[in-house]
Length: 104
Image: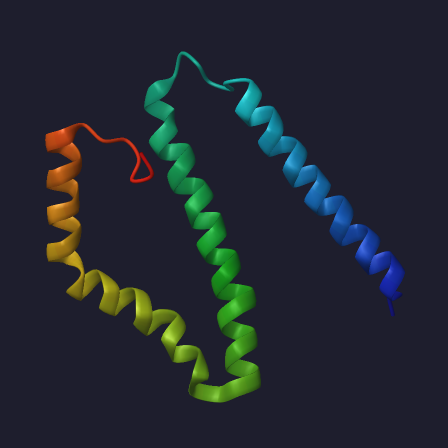
């Protein structure tokens, strides 16, 4: 059995490593001459995130709550089905005004 202190130290260390990698990635472009690789890197990162969420989130929720894990999958599916007209309008406005951020 792992002690609470060791587990907390490992979690904080892991978060520090992730922060360090993100900080390094923000300061220095890893592949400056290979812009065509960016979509692949983004897709792979998104795949890792979604796989991790599915494994730890959905499986844990299904074990604890039975069918209460269903909104994890149902919510995004319904959003993509019913929000498509809104997203199309949003993309058209973004392209028409050359907007890069909603915050500006």
